[in-house]
Length: 309
Image (cartoon, rainbow, N blue to C red):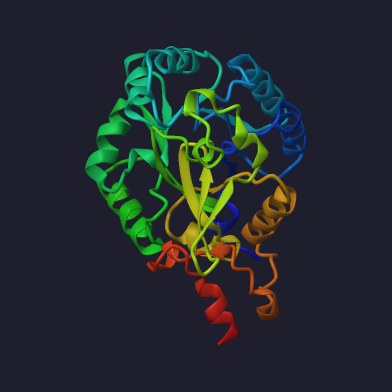
């Protein structure tokens, strides 16, 4: 049986980072309403040109999820590039129904000025109590630890926050391709030899991004429009106890196009102490990584080595 710190760990579905069709979004969130996830992040956080889903669409989905008992959060765009982006951001922050995940300082300032509580996204790069304290006083209720922070560093950071009387909850990126960088250039459009402003939305052809491989055919990165993600998929489902022990209160699961029902179910079993130990014979999937959590290069999969040895 899981101890109370593990069983109290909440599971969050992060925003969909990839560009899906309206039908895919709708079906995904209809299914997610029945999954044992406590928090659901909605919205387009990567590219402003992905306009299939409007704010009203996300609000509609959010209301349905809220009726299913989910905490709903609207994620802001990470890279603000134009006045149009700022107008959309203002509408998002002023939605009047759901908390906003601020993924850049523009969203932080908008929420703070309006006296709105918000979630601090990982792209804010909150590595220390000084930065967390400033944003907590501005209204931040929960923050995402930078994805490259190790479990030991998260533990130290949360302990330091509590020692200094900071109450913002910590969220850890526990599953999915790790978001690493954003650019004003669109790498997917470039791959198809199209300009960014006339990209014809080619990233929708890649519902889990486009693999960028080394000459040795290793998946080094995943290209997702203007966003660069890790090539491997971080998977900490067997590290749920250490996530809870770090003092973090939420484990984030980043949606993939297939198989998320099982992922969420496995994390739910893990927090209840019911997830079986991994089979060493199955630990050959080069797409999985957990290196950052263990203080190693992010693409490493340390559990594979530990179990097979």
